Image 1 (cartoon, rainbow, N blue to C red):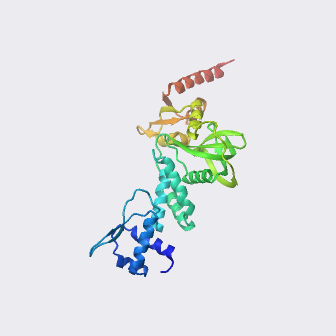
Image 2: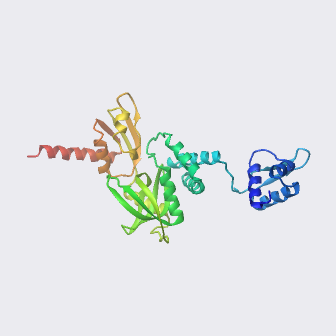
Length: 320
């Protein structure tokens, strides 16, 4: 094998197998001399791969842990397994590694051959995730498209559903994805509104990177996280606790996914504990539309709002 780059890649692939390789066996595998193997080992070390050599009759070479993370070579099965794992982790916001998970997934899917990407999508479609609490399920493809557009500084088109259910079409300059709790938000400059906006990613549909490049605008705050915090302070997240006099399956079918999944407390009862940054008006409407008896245990502000709303509705029906 005379092609040095290809030979180095093949050598690296062999060394990534967790075993010790005698120099003579590597030379035979790659059809080169032991001297060439020694030179190639030195080249890999220069590139940052920590290759350890042991002497003696049973000595050889092996790849060990180093101070930095070098590039890895993956076969088809390994690439598919990692992509599926990253999609699962990214879609459900594993606390502490959310953004790193999405960045890694975006990098991997950028170079994944179409035949492997199809296998990953097929495997993902064949699995079902159970969402609890406020962990609204997010399509990992949505996350990777947004992350890729933000990294490549490409304008993004997408559909967006507001808290009251209104659907709009948006075009924006994506700045950063931010995770908080178990939710993802996109911080972006909205072209149509001519202002900065934050979008809940679980309400984004059909994102499309247009290819049109942009120069990032200066944030009105110090960071994307600060901008999101400022936005959320106007609609702070509420701890929701509601019990229903109906089976969990009945209630779940009538609640939006963003509010989470109720847990059965009996054959004919269930309870929903979640967090939401929506208005009291919207929350009251969604709960009323479940069409069964329910009790709001928390927050107090929601219970008081529904009491006042009930009184107004009663007066409206009895007015002459």
